[in-house]
Every structure is written in C-alpha cells, then in structure tokens.
Length: 354
Image (cartoon, rainbow, N blue to C red; front, side, top):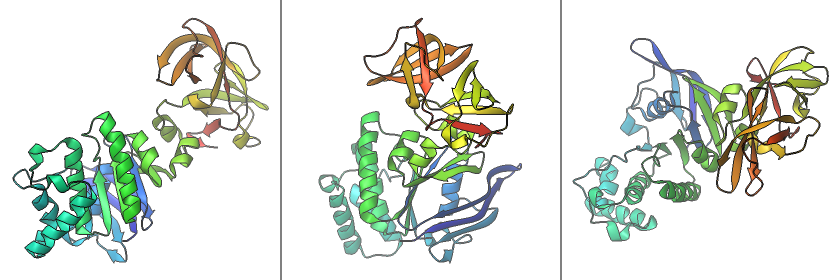
C-alpha cells in the first residue's frame, strides 16, 4: 500500500483549457479519499492523470516513494474501476477477474485460483461461469471490484462506480465498498458528483471547481464549516442559506432582520462591512411565534423530505429555508420564524469564511 502525492499537478488541453491548475495534494496510505464537484470541475481528469490515462502538462504524481509522472499506466501499480465497469462481454466472470493477472504473465492455474478466492470473498462464487450480460448491475460492480482486488495494487481509483445503480443498490453498494476498503486498507481515491456518497464514505474529501481544489477536510469539517461560498452552496442535500448582510455594531442586518453575530466571527467584523451570512436549514429552529434574532416571513413552499419537511419563508423578498420535523410543518401562507443556531451560523467576507 502507498500514499499518493500530487505536486503542482497541471493538465492543459489543446485550446488552452486548464483542467487541472497546479494542484497540491497528499493522500496518506490507507485513506479513503473522495473527489467531489460539479460536472466539468476536473475530478475525473485528476483521477485519470493519477492512473496515467491522461498525461500531465506539468507537476508530478508520486505513489509511495516513486515519481510515476512519466510511467505508463500498467507500470504504476494502481487499479481502476470505471463508471461502466469496463468488463469484457465475451469473457466469463472468472476470466474478467483474472485478466490483469494474465497481463502480468501469471500462470493460468494461479490466476484462476486467485479469481475464485476473490470472487468468493465478494459473494460471486455461484456466478463465476456467467458473462457480464447475464449479471445485474450490482453483480457487475462486484466483478469490477474483484478484478481490482485480484491485482493487489498499491492504490484503488474509482470513477463514479455507483452511478449506474438504482437508489437502493447504491446505498447497499456504498456500505459494502466502504467496509471492503477498510478491511483491505488500500489507499483509495473515489470520484463522485453525489455529495451523499462522499459524505458517507470518505475519510477526507476535496471539493473541486474549475480545476482547483476549493477545500480539503473530513466530511464533518466540509459540511459544518465550508471554507468559501462555493463549497457552502454546493455541499448539503438542502442548500445552505447564503444571505447578503451588513454588520451593524454587535448584530448583523440580514434580509431586513437583525441576527446575532455568529460565535466564530465575534470581534472579527468591521461595522458597516458587507458580508454573506450562512446557515444550513438543518441548523434553523422554526417557530410560528416571533423570537429575538429570528428571520420572520410568510411560508411560501413546504417540501416533503420524508422524515422531515423543508420550509421556505419569504423574508422581505428573500428566500430563507428551515428543516422541520415530520408532523410540525406549517401550511403555505402561515407566518413563520426561523431562528439560526448561533454556534452553527457562519460569516463569509469576500467569499471566504471568517
């Protein structure tokens, strides 16, 4: 197993498109690391550059103690699972799992034994003579994982491997994949556009935008303290409330209401300064009664989230959202008040967390 280090990694495509812009990143040995971001942010390009499927324009890729920047993909000792699994349709499960060992000139008997061993570990023993077209999406995914495991590579690279599964299978697969990675202890880089996957599975994660890394941290750090307004607006199943405001002494004027200065920003703001006030809907306490420091308005939308509801208030023509428990949701048109938790509210100055 091995750590992965990127030093000033740059990728520029013909026409000057800068897909990766001088990225520095260290992924420790054995870590499950997620790359998250919107389509086109560079996360798949970064993964493919680590794998050697894309050639770096500048910088270096170091795996373990080897600089592999100029090394061919097959000699980097990494294994990759693609979004479509890339299984050979004319081969059965045994031969698909054993294929990387065949490339390494492992004897036929040894590679079939290894395929059987890994297949059994992933619950595929009764499917070994089937071809990919005879398997479900979840079974194909396990074959792709088995093939990766059989290589005994220093690092695993996953390019949105759950995206072709239905919602229920995705939940099962991410639990299985995380458990498997912990058992194997292999350094893993996982690309996804699904924040729920990244938050649930990663030890640490990087949020990318336009070829840059905007924040690196644990899922809890990224969720609770987004480093900038881009990450704040991107992370979370319900978008963070990001509201323009002005500092008024020891309070903030936000959407025409007065709210307390968040604890983390106390004493660090200039009177009269323009800020962005951020608080997640999950950290808003909704009430039908007024309260000091609450944002009050009319309920304009109520969305059913299952065990809770997302309530949107029109506060002086500004939308403010709060999550309320099932059974306590208001009706559209009601007066309502959303009180931010002071210990969870954030302030952004020039787009960066104060």
